[in-house]
Length: 85
Image 1: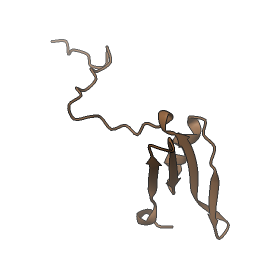
Image 2 (image 1 turned 90 degrees about the horizontal axis):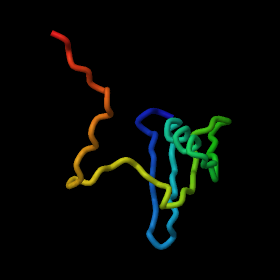
Image 3 (image 1 turned 90 degrees about the vertical axis):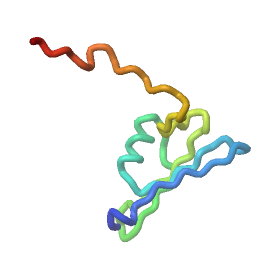
């Protein structure tokens, strides 16, 4: 599978309260499994794993978007040090 063919799909409805994730990216697989979620289904083609499906509760799902009207978080203390002159 070429890099351009890899995809990740997030699907949910507010009635079911579960996010269905279909992904061809190992990075997404690692991220879901680090949080403790196991794949519901593994897709294999020619003996090679190409995709995984996950079901994650909507309350546990966070993709990382920030609302436009919400201010940015301040930088952690000590992240930037002043230069000594």
